[in-house]
Image 1 (cartoon, rainbow, N blue to C red):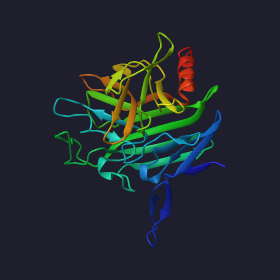
Image 2: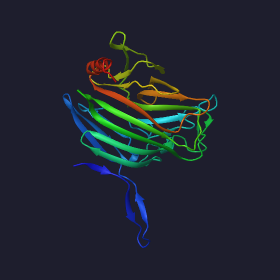
Image 3: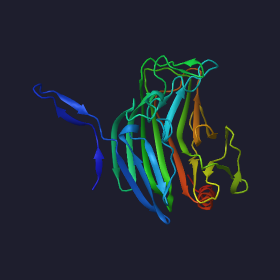
Image 4: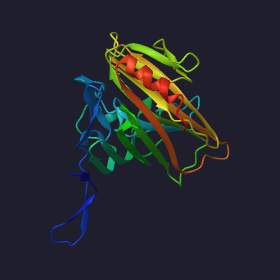
Length: 305
């Protein structure tokens, strides 16, 4: 049976008016993936963002606050006085939400059935008005943005059951003017034990050790435990579009916060203004042992997209 959560109308007693009840963001999908199931969980606390991904008894996501999930975000019009967090719609919520049970983001739709998940979220700005990031003042005047993220996630991609087929669509409002858009199509925050970093080198068709950086490269990034028993990577399906640069793959290791991160970023620039509307990105996330992840990335080099 399909478990679907949507905006359901409820009558306000004595008024005859209808009020939209918020969707329930708690959902779970799963599918057999090699020797174990991949299980993905979303929560109301994170406006339907993915707060847990487990495989073979291992948790792959660090979910301490509203930034450390498997999620998407965007940023606009960066400059020497305006960094990426000063106008930063974020799927799971705002910095001020912290480790709390509520989110500033607004979940609009969610459905989960079997191995498939779909959500639609009005994203919060990472900073609320008046807050600063690295001394730079938030440029947004509201806590909740008008930017909408729609994601479609399927566990399993063609003959690869240990891959997530992850599609993110960013909707940029028509009444906003931007000359630069930075789309963090997907980012993942992992526990600190995922401290072995690799890049997939397509020239030699294998993984090679990578420093903790931070920094961006052109090749897909993989984070793994030191014993290689658990690994998770990121690969973007190639695409061409006007004014588009990317994908680039970033990685970080935050010692003090005990968390590791990778991401995949696309950038759009146009001095006359980037177009409003939808920006679509498709990512594949290989999950498994380090050897299994390497095999998937190698085989995807030969797929005709």
